[in-house]
Image (cartoon, rainbow, N blue to C red):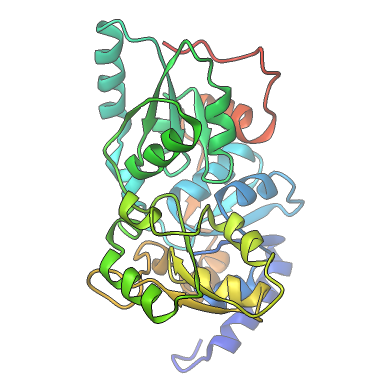
Length: 325
């Protein structure tokens, strides 16, 4: 391959490789537009987890971060799951290692606390394996409402999402002190300046944002909910968007009649996830050619699969709940 190969050339190579190795490409909304454009399926974490279970191809190329590819493998043990860059991590997952969560749970038990652990999908499989429920921003409120009232809720790892869920559901929670490195650093001063410049604009924010951003927003929801929300506006409208900057591509693609303005971060004009950015067209092509990096089955995947399936795919009747602690 020539060093001067264009993105178009590489994209064509990838399309040919999909047929050659019987692969399907899944891409998160936070991937670069050129990757989302090439993907067979785009979505948020909940949609991608569910769609991964319907894939007929023998290989899933997951354009996202490590915990997402891990989830796809857990829910599809028989599939080969490739991740273009194994170092594509997540600050939230890093903030809640399984051993640390396990020690904290044990401390709560020793102190006589009766609780269930609700864990955000932005976590490792080992952390998921210690949980009673797994949630995404798309289903978190529904799952929280299903936790029996006699249990306290230990919510990990995203403090801001947990705080928001506590507000909307009225459930008190024990909150883990983790945060997303992208959503944590939006500038409230710049948001207020933008709102003054565009007084008719609607502000949409991800629930991973801190309270000082959420309180100035017209709509709070995950990425899939954002797409649906802006779709309700027939007339061209300005939206101030407080989430990862690549979401703008998806919004523009689905609803091009509107105008989208990224809310600046405290240190830059827009917020992009450096972990998501590790995936490139070249790395997608190379992982398909080489058959690696591959997500392989780990011992903790069995227990994590139990929790993921119950939480995301086949919710049990209301009467059937995990035992908790």
